[in-house]
Amino acid sequence: MTKKKIKEVIIVEGRDDTAAVNRAVDAVTIETHGFGMPDSIWPVIEKAYENQGIIIFTDPDYAGEKIRRKVSQRFPLCKQAFLPKGKALKKGNVGVENAKAEDIVEALEKARCTSALENADPFTTEDLAACGLIGTADAKARREKLGNLLSIGYGNNKTFLKKLNQLGVTKEEFYQKVEEL
Image 1 (tube, rainbow, N blue to C red):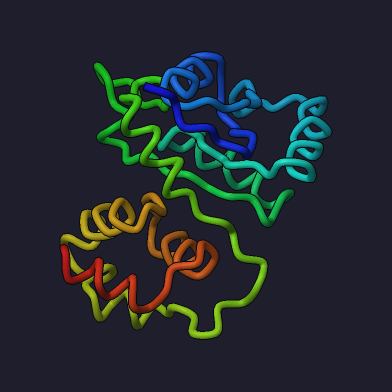
Image 2: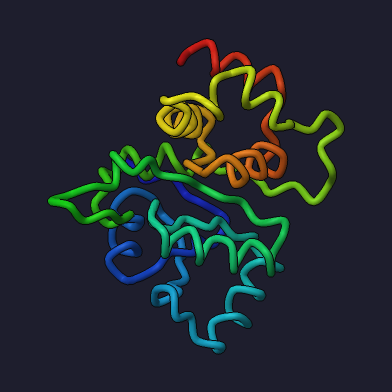
C-alpha cells in the first residue's frame, strides 16, 4: 500500500518522532530537538513555512505544548495536528514515537490551520460552562474527550477556549461533538 503524501513539512520534537511519522506517511520533517530549540532551527522552519507550509505535530505533554506555542506564535498560519495522550502512551512514556501509524495518519489528516482572523462568533466561557466544560467535577475529563473529538487536543479552561477560537472550530461542529460526549 502506498503511503499518503503530506505536502507540508511536519515539525516534530526528535528523530524517534521522525521515524514514526515516516512509517505512517511520506513527508519531510524538521526536528526541534526538544524544548531547547537551537536558534539555527528557526530559518529552516521559516523556509518550510513560506514554501510548503508546516504542520506542528508535537508530543501531547507539557514540553510538546510549549514547543507548539513557540512555533505557532512565530508562524501564525501554520497547521496543527494533535494526538490524544492515550494514543501516544507506551509504558508510561508519552510521545508521537509511540503512536500507531494509523493514528498518526488520522491526526495529520485532521490537522487544523491556525486562524489569523478573528472568529466572527467567538466561543466564551459561558459556552464552556453551559456544556459542563468548566465548573464541574468532570470538566477536565470532558474537555479532554471533546478536544480529542474536535482534534484540537487538551487544554485547561483558558487554553481550550483559545484553541476553539483559533483553530477554526465552528459552533455547529462544537455542539455536535458535545452531544457525542
